[in-house]
Amino acid sequence: MMPIPASTLTRRSWLAQWAAIFVEPCFAQTGPSQRCPSAAVRDLGFSDFPAQVHEVAAQLGLTAATFPHYRDTQRRRLAERIREGSAEHVTYYVLQSRRFTPLEPIDPVRLAASGPTEMPAPVRARFADFQERSAGVADERCRLVRRLFLSLPEAWTSDACFRHTMQFLARKGPQAAQRPDRREVLDQLYQQRGLSSDTAPEQTLVLDEALRWIERSKVPAGRTLLVGPGLDLTRREDFSDATPLTAYQLDRLLAVPGIVEAGLDCADIRPEVLAHLATRPVCGFEMDITTQCTATAGQYGLMIATNLLLYFEEAALLAAMTGLVRSLKPGGLLIHNDARFAAKVFGELLGCPVEQFQPISLGRRGAVEQVDRLIIHRKA
View 1 (tube, rainbow, N blue to C red):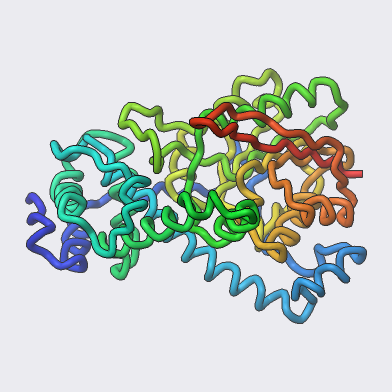
View 2: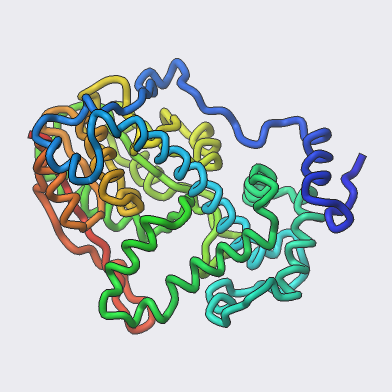
């Protein structure tokens, strides 16, 4: 039986019909396996915070009494941010992909700059084609994006996905770029935006420099943890259906002699990333580093969390760094690219001070040089 075209159905009846005929689960379940003994995860507790952190934690609203409330609130907000990230992925794909429609692609950034107050007719036509035709497309990326859309609650209609994405792009647009406090504005925006699996090839430039630095430094033997490896699923700019569906940082680490043999783990919360990790020669598991930590302390010699910590406001950042440092071996390294002063202070309080800080050029976009940061902490 073929589904009735979605344009003749309500969202609920369309989902119900797919549930009846689409027998495989929306995403693979990726729990610990025999080749993944390090994947045990537990809740982070206030008792995991060392005494020297308590004063700063209290200033951020984290105490033994308030921590359970923080954890519950953080998890609810995290679930919503995952849905918001899914809405962005769906919108970027529907506007730009050629896989499911003959209609011309639409540039999301340019469209957002025009300030649409409702979904334009060309966008609505593309969403209609996506709902009616995407199930018949033999393409892994299309399949993953369609499953993201199906997994969203009913309130996340195509219009809701579109509005949310346009609002984010507008807030990130030219007006924000011209403000004198641009860095602070963007920091606040990313601490509130949806959590997507965004990644791009240039993100390996920070990792490459980190690996060169590590070659000249002493790192304790042990497993490596890559937190938030991401997946190049969709992009708001320069999207192509021919873009490899891959996690660039993971690919780079898999090419480093000795890392896989010592044990390479990957933790993420996005469902499509976890499904991808299940197909790779790594230990992949689900972990929210703002409310959870690995069950075994001191098992990692190296941790990499680039393009991740900057999504957290300061209380969540302190919680995340507490759990990560707890899982590091003495002398182990934590690598990230969050240049906030708070990350430096938290590292020192946790006994994991910054040992290396340097800018990394990502090349030029138009007349503007794009710059990232490499920050390396070492656990005392």
